[in-house]
Image (cartoon, rainbow over all chains, first blue to last red; front, side, top):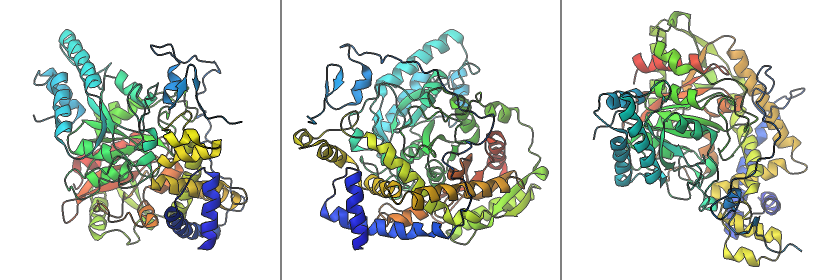
Length: 102
Length: 486
C-alpha cells in the first residue's frame, strides 16, 4: 500500500497531475490492484518474441501512404489570425500566450 | 413522423416524394430536442439544415436521389465527439476541451459529408473514449434507449443510444478496446470496427494510437458496409492508414448471392465459452451457433490460448499510449486554462493547474500509463505487454488458417444499471474480455443482435474476421441478420 502510494506520488508528478489527498489514497489503492493484476504477464514466456507496436506493420504490400513533406500554411480567420491557434485558450497576435518561464 | 430505419429506406422515401431531406432533418432535430437521453453534446441545427436544404435543391433538379455518386445523399448522421468537425465544438467528453473548436474536419467525416451525409451533431461519450458505460463523460451519463436506469455501454454510448432511440439514421463511433461493439450489443444495433489501418485517424482525437479505429453503429449490416466503404482508403494525413483503395463491400452485399454455409467454417474459441457469461448471454450465443450449424456451416473448436492475458496487455499498452497522447493537453495549445494558472510560479505548476480539468478515469489511466513507461519499468511492463500482444495476434493468425470467421459473445453481460460497477475500475475493465483481443490484433469485428435477456435487454453476437477480410465478415453478418435468431 505505501509502495503504491509512493509510486502514485512519483508518477503523478511526472505526469503533471495534481491530486488531492483523497485522490492519492483512491488511486494508489486502485493502482495497486491493477499492478497486481497485470503481474500475470510475467508468467508468459516471451523469449525471442518481437514486440508488436502496431498491427499489420509486418505485412508487405500494405505500406502506409505518405504525403509529401510540404509545409502547409494554416488558413486564417476573419481577423487574419491562423486558425490553428484557435485551440489555444489564450492567444496574442500570431502566438500562444504562456506565463513567463524565465 | 415515422422515420425510415435504413439508408435505402430513406432514399426510397425521397424518390417517392414521401419525405424530403429538410423534413427528415427537422424530424431528427425535433426528436433530439424532446429526448432526455443526453445522447448529444452539441446539436448543429443550422449547419445540418443548410446541408439538408442543399440536398433538397439538388433533388428538385435531378428528380431522383443520385445514389451512385452520393451514396449518403440526405442521410442524417450523428458523430461521436471524438471526431473533429471544423468550427464545431469538439470536447471528447472532457472539460479540458470544453471550449475547443477545431480548425479542421476529420477525414472520416469529410468523406461522409462529401458523399451527401448531413451531420446532426456531436454525440456524448466516455471522456477521451475511456470507459465501458458512458458514465465517465464530463457532461453526464447517457441513458439506455429502452431501459432508462441502465447504461448504453461505452465508450460510444451516445452513438448507440442516438441510433437506437431514432435520434439519427446511423452514427460514427470509435473502437479502441470494444467501444463500438459493446454499446451496439447493449442497445441492439450493428456495431462494426474495421481492420486497423482501413480508415484514416486524421481528426480522430487519439486515445491509444495503435488501437484506435473509427467504427459505425447502424440499424443494419448493409448500412454499416455503406458507411465503411466511403470512409475507407488511403489518406496521406494518417501514415498508419494503409495504402489501399476504398473498399466495395456494400456493392458486394447488394449483389447478393447466397452464402455457401456448407463451405463455411465458424471458429468457436473455447476461452470465450468458459462459463463466465450471464446465462441469458450463453443461451443466446449457443442458439446462434446452433443456427449456423442448421445452415450447414461447420463449427470448429479452436483455442486462442493467450486470451487470459489480453486485459492485462491492453491496460498496459492502451494507457501507455494514452499518457503520451494526452500530454498535449497542457493549457497552451489545447484545453482550458483556469485563472489560477496564470499566477503559477513555474511551468510545471502551470501544467498541473490546467490538467486538473481531466476526469477521474483519465487521471487513473495517465498515472498507470506513465508508470508503465517510466524509467526502470518500461521493459517489465510496456515492452513485455507488446510482446504478449504479438502472441495474441499469432493466436488469431493460426486460428484463421482453420476457420473463416470466429463467433463469440461481445460482452459477458447485458446492459447493467448506472452506478452498479463504478466503484471498482478493475471489475469494469474485466468486462471487456471478449472485445479486447481482436482490438490488440487489429482485426475487423462486429456485433449483430442475436437475442434478448429476461428483461428485454439486447444481446450481441460477436463475429471476428481475418485482417482486411471485411467483405466476407459483413456477408456472414448479413446472412445471420437475415435468418438467425434475434
